[in-house]
Structures are given as structure tokens and as C-alpha cells.
Image 1 (cartoon, rainbow, N blue to C red):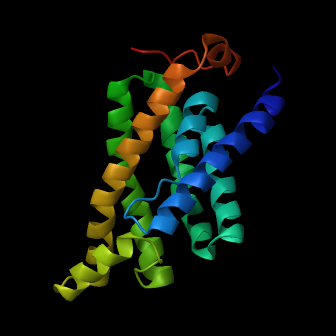
Image 2: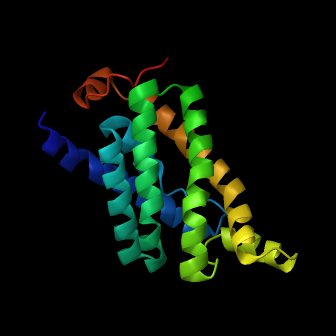
Length: 189
């Protein structure tokens, strides 16, 4: 299968998964994001560039159809795709590696996302994590610390959960699809 056709057929699926997850989290106002499952999936299946492209398009679409605050956070979703693709292609995508990926993303994402949230939006972006940020500010934390500390545990839970969901999605894919996606490292190791 042509690589361009592969991206054209797979990236939109990841974008839709991200949009559905992000909209569910936003609607329920839960302190999770759920908007990177498709990015992680495509990073694992297509590699770092496919994952990064999925993340970028997802945040742009979510920013246009739902909430403009998604757009600046495209950088976070791009990095998710890059890291997911790198880990899957270099180490395989076992359950253990999914958990490791989730932990890595759970730490890296708030490091990137917190300054965006603080400097562009005063630390509050309208998501479920704002409640925790506000509580930390009320208890005496400065805005940067409060925004980071609120995002760290929610990102750890969100990204580990998302990476495990992706593991089980990949595990259910038929081998010929995995082979078509040219991801020889995606197997149970």
C-alpha cells in the first residue's frame, strides 16, 4: 500500500477517535483529556510522523468545532505522536511498554502544556482540571505550580489509561493490518 494512501486512510480515524474522546471528557467535565488515544494509536501504527500529524490535525479540528483553547495545545499532541511512534518502533508495544509510554507522556505533557495554559489562559482552560488548579491556588500555590501540579496526576492517569487502551486496540487488530501498516515492532514482546 502506498504510504500516502496509508496516511490518508489512517490519520482521519485517529483524529475522529481523539475528537470523540476529547468531547466526552469536555462534556463530562472530568479531570482527564481523552483526546490523544488516536494520536498514540497512529504513532504506534504509522510511526512518529503519522502520530504527530494526527495530533496536529486533531487539535486544529477540535479548536475549530469545539473550543479554540485546543489549538495552542497542538504542540502537546504532536509530541505525544512523536514519542508514541518512537517507543513503538524502537521497543515494540507490549502492555509493559504501554504503561511506560503512559508514564513518560504523563510527565512530558504537563511540562509542555502547563506554560501554554498559564501564559495564554491564566492557568484555567475550561476543562475538568481547572477545579484542581483552583483548589491549589486557594490553598496558597502560585499559578504555575498549581497548574502543573493539577495537570501532573491527571496526565499520568489519562496517558497511562490511553496507552493501555491503545495496546488493547492494537492487540485486536488482525496481523495483516499490522503488516500493511509496516509496523514490524508492534507485537507482544
